[in-house]
Image (cartoon, rainbow, N blue to C red; front, top):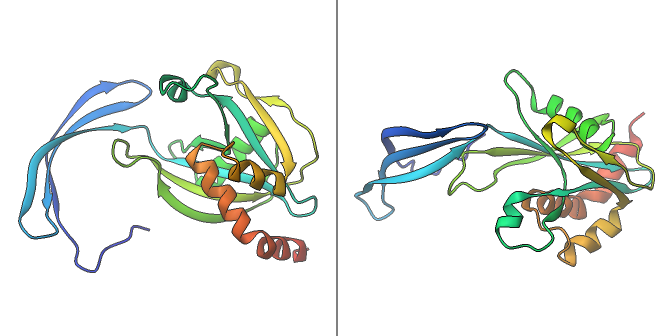
Length: 208
């Protein structure tokens, strides 16, 4: 669902050029749009990266009150100057053609964390970085059975090297408040669990 403001404003894409086509696609858009004060802004140009849409899922066990977070190397953090660009994140993946978001959540949980998701609660949809990317992410918390420990997962041909952290939810909250979780999508889903854990546990523990 897209939010439509009370007084819808108009925009026009006058022209679009594909600058690069690989795993991502980079497009240059020539745009104009309505101004808040009346009149029109533009035409002007913006470069936008397109790679499809994503799913993010936080595996949570209401019985043990544990979550799974993952850790992996991120080239973007490296280029930003981070001396240790291994980030704590939530399980995530791109939606392939013909896939439902719930399928992606379950597939990625298994591939990245060896975790089976039995139920999903949709948190919200959000844009990861709308100033330069078209990607929209669907965020979930997933019902899982989790035991203490860690492992290494990922798909070799995608050069994935992913370490899991199966930790108590309270410890994940401490990581968040201490700034140890710096990936935006993981921040959002862990914050959501902080606010909704009691209600979610009651719901899932009451289920047969």
